[in-house]
Image (cartoon, rainbow, N blue to C red; front, side, top):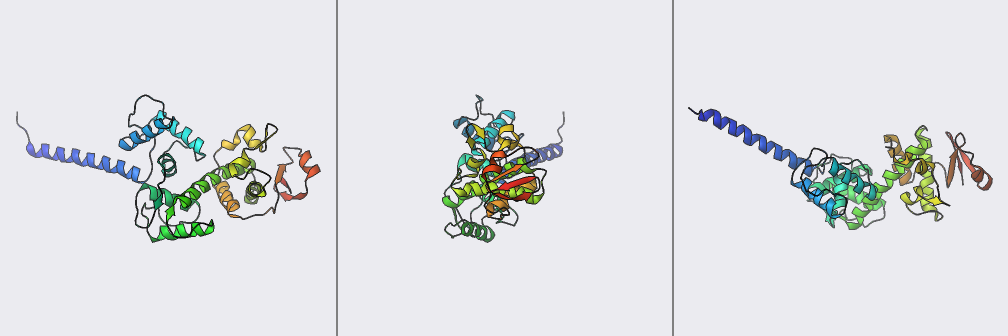
Length: 289
C-alpha cells in the first residue's frame, strides 16, 4: 500500500489550520466578553465553576460546554444582579460574576475594557467603536462620565467609577422596563413623563431612594405600579423606552415635580384626584403633584 506523502501533508496542514482558527475564534469570543449557548472551552468551564461556587450552577459536572443548564444558571444570576436576563454571559454579566477589578487605565486591554466601553457607550459617553483597548478616547469618555456624576476626574476607571457605571446599568435597565410597561402605546413624551415620575420619587425623600426600590415598592401589600402586580414589568423594553429612560435619568424633565400618574381609561384614581394637585395630561396619562 503506497502513501502519498504530499497529500497527507496537505491534509495535516488543513487540520492544523482548522484547529488554529477554531481556537482563535474561541479566544476572540471571550476577548469580546461574550459566552452563550454553543460556546465551549476553558472560559465556559471557568464560568460554570464560578456560578457553581455562588450556588447558581447545580449540575454535578463542569463540562466546559454552554448548554441550557448553564444558560439557566446565568439567567438566575442576572436576575439577582438586576441586569438584563438574556442568558448570555456578556461583559456586564462577566464583570459582575468575576469582579471588575480595582483599576482600569490608559494602556490596558481585554474584556474588562470591552465591558467599560460598552457601559460608557450605553450611558452616552463613548461614541467610538468598542475595541477592548483603553486609549485616549476611552480615557476622555471616563473623564466626562466622572465629571457628570460628581466623581474625581482623573480618567482612570477605579472602583468608584466602575461601581457608578454598574449602578447606572441597573437603573436604566429597570427604568426602561417600567416605562415600557406603563406607556408602550404612548408617544415619546408620554414615555419620558413616566420616567420623570419614577426619578422624581427617587429624589423626593418620600419614597425609596433607588430606581429599583421605587418600582417595586409596596403599600399595604399592594404594588405601587400595576406592571409589578401583573408581571408586565418583565417584558422587554423597546429602544424608545431605553432612550426615554436615559433622558429621564439624566434630568430631562417635562412633568415638573409630579409624583403620581394614572390612566383614566384603565383606573379611577380617586385617591390621587381627591388628595393631590393636578399637574396636567400627557397622552392617556394624568399627572399629579
